[in-house]
Length: 170
Image (cartoon, rainbow, N blue to C red; front, top):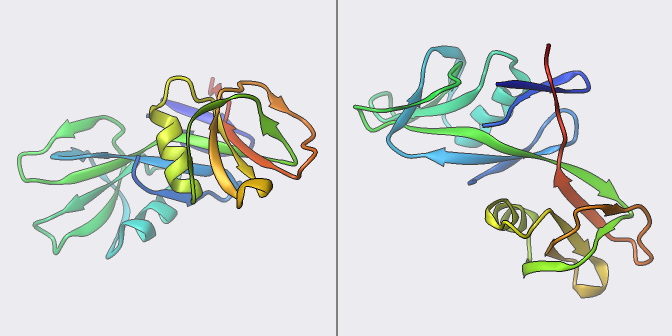
């Protein structure tokens, strides 16, 4: 299902994150032994390269790695994830995270992390977590937070990330 935020379309369907043109951060889910139907563009030698271009390609709903094609990463239309008879692996966007500068979320919901990717991945799978806040006073660590409301002004210059809200396309 396609969702729209501003001028950019995303598919909401966690292994790698990358920046979208809008500045949002996308968390990708890995689907072992799976493929997405139909090519949506050229192939790449790296997963990161394929994901970056996929986010900018309105036809692309995910990436499939082809072991029979020198392990190339191909942009795919999907959107359904299907069982692969030939050992392919696919990735789709699980969540898109919006950044909120000079803000924080209340209440801790789990462990703290040294990098944003690990914190967002953990938060995605933690039912109590509604976002991540980076704490300058805690060695700039990323903490899982309960929120869910973003507190508009941080007294210590924190930055938070929450899952973006989307409006279904008509």
